[in-house]
Amino acid sequence: MSGWELFLFSFLNLRVMAEYLPSIAAGFLLTVQLAALIIASGLALALLLAVLRSLGSLVLSFAIVLFVDLFRAIPPLVLIVLLYFGLPNLGFTPSGFVCTWVVLALVLAAFAEEIVWAGILSVPKGQWEAARSTGLSFFTTLRCVVLPQALRLAIAPLTNRTIAITKGTALGSVVAVSEILAQASAGVSFSSNPSPLTLGALAYLVLFGPMVLLARRIERRFAWRH
Amino acid sequence: MLSRPIIEARAIHKSFGPLKVLDGVDLVVAERELVFIIGPSGSGKSTLLRCLNRLEEPTSGHIVGDGIDVLARRTDINALRRRIGMVFQSFNLYPHMTALGNVAFALRRVVGLRRRDAEERARSALALVGLADKADAYPAQLSGGQQQRVAIARAVALEPRVMLFDEPTSALDPELVGSVLRVMRQLREGGMTMVVVSHEMEFARAAADRVLFMDGGRVIEQGPLDCLFGAPKSDRLRAFLRSLERH
Image 1 (tube, each protein chain N blue to C red):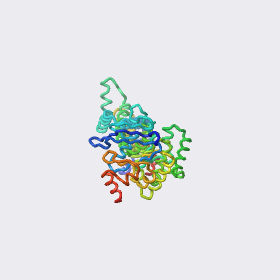
Image 2: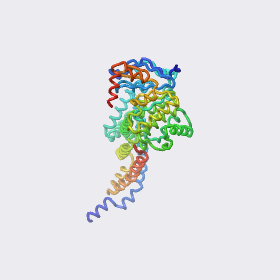
Image 3: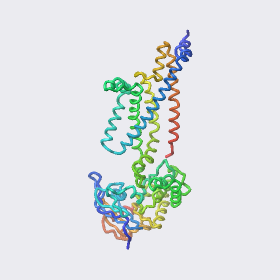
Image 4: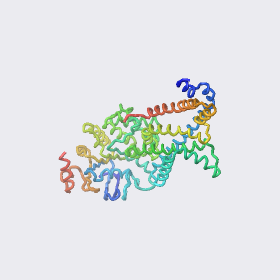
């Protein structure tokens, strides 16, 4: 076998790929669900925390900063393993899926809160004052005047961070979540051929490619000229 | 001779940390009166204005606005602010809304008008400031003078009892100042009660009932413009007037 043939046989072996397509497709669906849960709950929590922080309560802000710094500092894999193997000692036995979801959602919330908060801070004080001077409440001002401007600035770093953290679903493979990477690795072991990994890479591309495009669309939608 | 006061501020003190910005200021504004406030920068004139609708919280003092205790805890400040319009030096239009959206927003959210009614009233406010044809423009597509007129329309549309102007033309190119002053004159002629912090002496000469000169957080002199400018009693006002002439 020439080098090229060897490469094709190892990484683009159609027979092996066909065999493991169903299991990787199943992993794909699971990953989509996991990613959707992480993004929805992580971003919702981030927004909630940023709004709470804007209330200006010292105690609340301190607690939020503590949470954010903690979850930005510790590698997600450590947290996932800690939760998965530690919690049973306390009488909870969450599945690997739940552990991965919770940890990545919290990590995403921590990073995204900082991004949204920076966006809120970057909106000039005059915007608050103009809105409040017409009798608008704090929350209406925040929701309709400040957040649209804050999110417009936040949207690019937010989508970047969201994609980066959502890719961490692959960490679930360590705690028995049958997501794409776990299925591909299993395929590699059973077939003694790395082609399922190529298929896994394609599956990630199919999953995150559209997300990148969606992010670009959102950025365009939020753009207005200054 | 003057009817009941719309604004009655007594002994207003305001400190930022150790810095005393307002040191016992009284300001009474009668209905349909135009009070013009002058003074060097840092004299506390903007802070005084911002205390009147509680954008700044005075350290102590009493303010009655349109018969309501402005500083009382139980006062619904949002309901009160609706009746005290404010125009800022830096316009502060919402960049993500059209001119019409900027004016209609509080009409919907604060007054509670339906979209159609709010937009109708917003259009007539824009017409009042000569910008009926710019309703669909975003702030970035408008000149500074146009933006400031939209900001005036935004405040006027709420039909306030008094309008506060905080250096409304200071951020404008000279050739755009006139359009804003014209709108203010027009409001004045319509009987609007106004408190104006500004350096536009021509406007003061033409429209002000009374001029207040502030320095160091106090009202140093006040009265009709001619008295103040013709026969300043204090050294500080004389020095201020000389500094104006140099420009």
